[in-house]
Image (cartoon, rainbow, N blue to C red; front, side):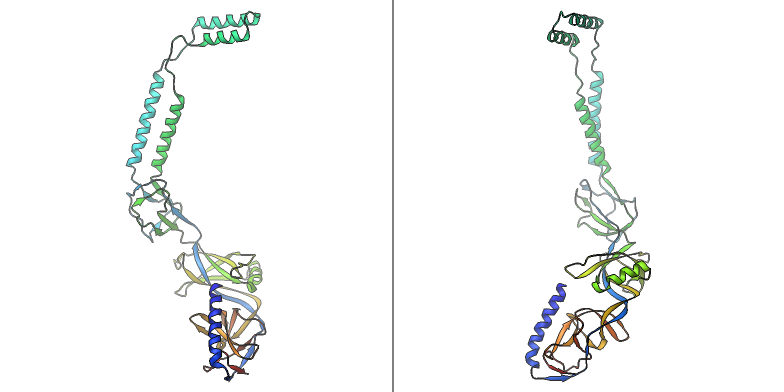
Length: 368
């Protein structure tokens, strides 16, 4: 819509300049008052093609890539190794963690364990009996019991917390080693690679893989057609296709139609999902889509001869309320039987010049 506003401003500026040169001149030409008539829906619109499924390859560790360099356009299969990072430093980390854990567990196994003697057990029975008879207070009983339970000879203690930490360190090292090999989660094609694909940097995107089929075409539907398309989809009379530059087309299905219009464009976003088995389309590119149904919609049409085209787009000449020639930028649709559908830019009651003569200038008096 910003482009359209720019076109309108440009045309308005041109009109202002031309009014001065056209003042006092007049031209006789045929005009037509704009009205709406019922026509079947037949739209050709621009659509942006994207992959239904895509993924980015983001290494979890850094290192030199020892597998074949990735290349844009390369085909990839699901489960295939995409990247192999040099494992040598990570294998060393695993070996070091294993050695440290083995040493710690060996030391723990060699430590003597304390076993209470028979005398200790008898002493504890006696203390309990004295406590029950009231000969010992609770404090005295607890103190004497703790002294009886203590080992008579000190023994090396096992640091279970350290062993648990070493086990975690070993698992972390093994996980890092497993991350050195990256597999593709989908079938697809590499559509982008990093500037230096021979080195992996943890957290940085190394490549993008996009699925080539099915694809999604996203486009904008003018408000006047939304209800008709919804009804046609429910009735099964909606036909949609995506058109390749070669002229070949691929049928698709309308899988999304917004229920609210985009305030920035005044149109409704729609999506077509379609197969790309013939490899006619590339994600990221723009193509024409064709959408039609016998469902009729009240539309504005003008004679084909009324539409003119410049670098800024299509426009028509109209007669303003002062009877002077003016230019109006329009968004055109399909052509049928010598008439062009006007999707935006005109309203009922506007007076269009049917076949503007070469001598026509903005600001001229129009006699019809």
